[in-house]
Length: 233
Image (cartoon, rainbow, N blue to C red; front, top):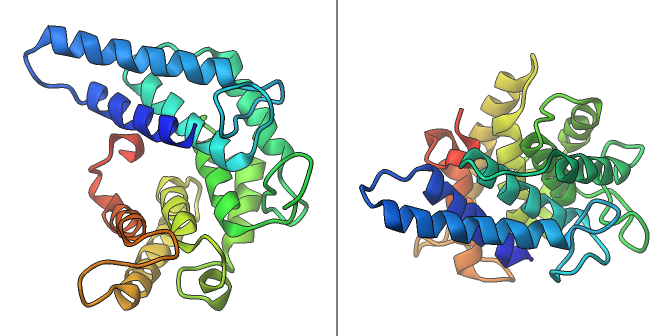
């Protein structure tokens, strides 16, 4: 479902930006996106979330965040998304917020402590559902203040580039009176931190792969250029 969500997002972005004079190809692409959305809708579990397999069993915040991004991209491209699906997903995510403002991984089970990566993913998921300044989002941003790109707390987390990806989107899309200052500070610190991490070869490395770390770093660094329709302002 991770791969399916990212692929759906990419195809929906292409559909939304379609400029070729080729109605037949555009129609085929729209049909692919619509079929991808049907699978996502069918895989939502009774709590309102999604997990790794395309069956409506359990759910976690990470996979759920990717599905909401895919559904937002599809809706932006004109594909119908039931409001009930989004409402259930919002309710599920909000249920995962801890008292400190951070978010846990699942409603039940292990990894119930707050963490910056999953908290940033939760913020982006709520933003993609239209909640840019809800109480849950405000509390989550307060929690993330101690996890700027170059801090020790940020460096020591297990999913640094995953967190950077979602935190950057969250900061860029944030609303409210603190939004502009929050983004300016984040963008400056992000540039410094990632410049230090860049290898002499031009890539970034991680325990997952250099391709992954490099892609995440480049997406984060160029976000303000408005190249990606999903985060356009």
